[in-house]
Length: 306
Image 1 (cartoon, rainbow, N blue to C red):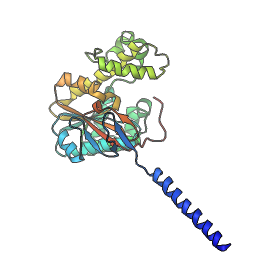
Image 2: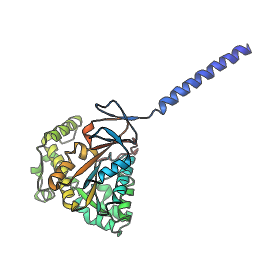
Image 3: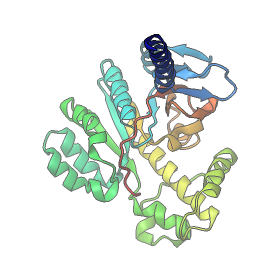
Image 4: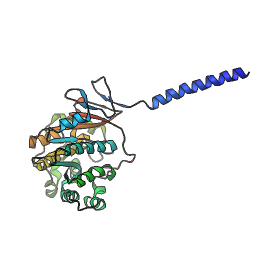
């Protein structure tokens, strides 16, 4: 009897160990990023140079980016790792580009004087948040962007407000550009390109997947998106000068370059590169950017309403 009991216990322990190993192995299996048409998935923190299909190091990426005038680094707004990567790129490029500036989607251009006072060291954080009306405009937690803005302040790097006043695209989406008052229309760029078929098709697919309350006209929706992209592109062109700029914007504004990048290039002819940050666990196309960086999937637990 004791021998049978001992044998049963050994069997149970063996099966438990196997189960634990199996379950544990599944739990720690790393997530990967799938690139359509590429059989090799990307591991977290790997960088793909899409022109060659080769995996490159961070050092090689920085060396490549050093050769262009404008660098676009995308983001998923609530992904903590994306903002850490953006800061890493800014730090590396600033070492050899003292005339570097940072263009940010997160501020509308009417706040440029406030940004200038911030980087001049004239405002503390609390006053900066008040004067930019951060939580009335951008609304995402300031913690996400604090390190980037603090680095700019400490190193006197000019931060450029790229965006339209946030009410303008919303008004266009429900009534079209023609519905804007004369005062609102003054905020628009001199030219707005609505002729890019690839861009239109991309946004039409997004439009079909979502219900936009009170916004049942795709043409108005598309006018709003193009006004948004061209307005930010115009600010890149206005402030680039002879220096170098790192532009921080949502991935949707840099994907396939037909948002801000190509529109800014049409105005400046300054060479540029795009770095598309993609969390592991998803799937993307190779043409999303010049470089694809597989990142951790670490969104903040609370996402604000926009």
